[in-house]
Image (cartoon, rainbow, N blue to C red):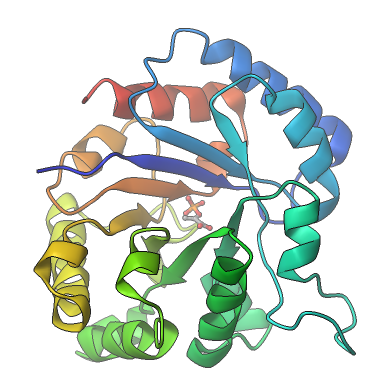
Length: 256
Ligand code: PEP
């Protein structure tokens, strides 16, 4: 049984507030005939979130943040707490994106702390996991993913598992134009789900939403989303233009 798909766009360090207003308004118009069969969200930079929320009002497009700190307050220059996000009406947050792991020292432990802080504040985390090319080619893909799951989801309850989204993003497929083949992606998603089954039991694992991310485009989304264990997409480049992102969403929605 397929789970409800969740298609989300990570804008990374792109789009001012004015550009966000324009793109979200355009996307909203292009989704006028959207059948509502899947969930949709965009993650603009922090300072563009309010513009995104205003432009998305009355549409099915959720607006989230790209990061959250785990502390409630304190000496963490440049960070924002979960309570601050919540007060700003933010209910979705990406945690542990590979760029944050690579450039900002994010570890499985900090991913875990941020995930728990978001959940405690009633914010849905989109927790990113994924292996590098070196790890895959060295035969370490499963051990890397297992550590990301066991350490990144430590102390997360079964109930909380059904209130978050896991995003599997092979690092070698992010922004490279190289997509995992549907077979490669399905095999890895099935492995990830089996690790959640080992931790939480099959019934819970069967409910966990596992997105795929890595060069997802309008042309390949249907094939990927048709795979049994792929429950949506976290999209970078193809979420930046309303034309591309609306086509991608509508192609996925046409499957259900
Ligand atoms: C991402 O950054 O999460 C991503 C998947 O990027 P892209 O779609 O551009 O590969």
